[in-house]
Length: 428
Image (cartoon, rainbow, N blue to C red; front, top):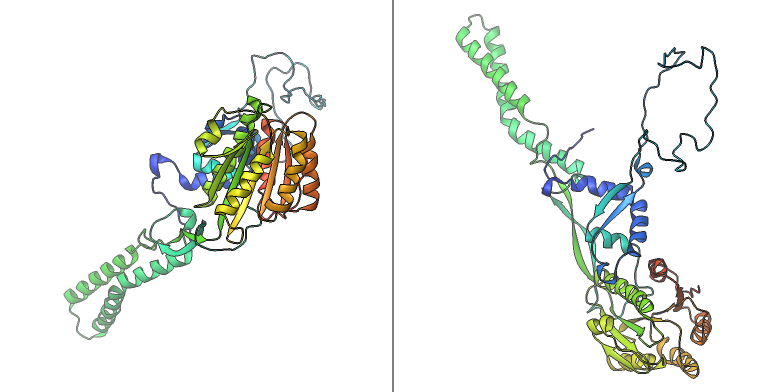
């Protein structure tokens, strides 16, 4: 068995290979820490790196060691209470075990949690792992491009985890054959000549000594040829290739009426920022349409969607009507995969909720692949939620979820866009 150790220095003397191994080994703990950390971030600070803490006990590794067997006599200094053969009672629960209760002490020691910093890319990879736009179908393959990793032969440089042992050994064998073939051929000839001279009745000692020195030199040179050299190493090469899938558009509908207080709007923005980062990181050239509404709906750009202070009453159907107009004008459902996410606190003009149901059933749901409704409120559900519940029971491509606090945003986001998810209703 051959062992390859990559001792090349990484940038800033950090081991990329060890870092990747650490993330893979403790991925579950890191993902849990990332999930907890996202709820504590501000709206504008979601797409940066993170320092995560892992309990020290979770990174401990099992160790094999040889214990001291047999009967042993040990002398403990300061013993004035026990004699040979005495039995010592086991300490009661919480005594000496670090239970965390009682007064402070000036003795003892412990260990803090292990703090591990991950980069922005590592943070986002963990954040959006196993997520995808559900129910995407192949339509016209000319706009949306997904980057996928493919094997791309072998290269002479890479990380140790990608070393191809067989290719490297083949290269080593070929190099050693090329470097020693001539020497081995001359060695064989020299040994034959030496044997003939030694068998001859008359010996020329100077020629024999010369041949012996040449043979020793050749053997030394052949033995000095390294078994493996950095030139022999071959690494599996991977590259990301664009793979055209289908044209896709995401409609983001947000209620900005007066009933949406600042805290509720902040939670809606958090959800949409997560959605925007997921789309732009996982898919290339996907289109996003932003619609804000109160009594009137308006298509806006990204800046106005997240930062405008406009407010007013609440008529949800205005946003649905505008979405339907935009679809008919720009996004043919036979050519586009259409998705929608709507965030609201559930308040709506009572006579308008049935209108929302009609628009969704007759115009929007037949055209979209997936429609997600997120209600952000701590109050009892109102007419809009009850109307949407009826839609969810009859249409598998409609999902609704209830967000009560910031901590609910990320778990619900993952639930809505989980990979290989069977499209079905999800009711809080």
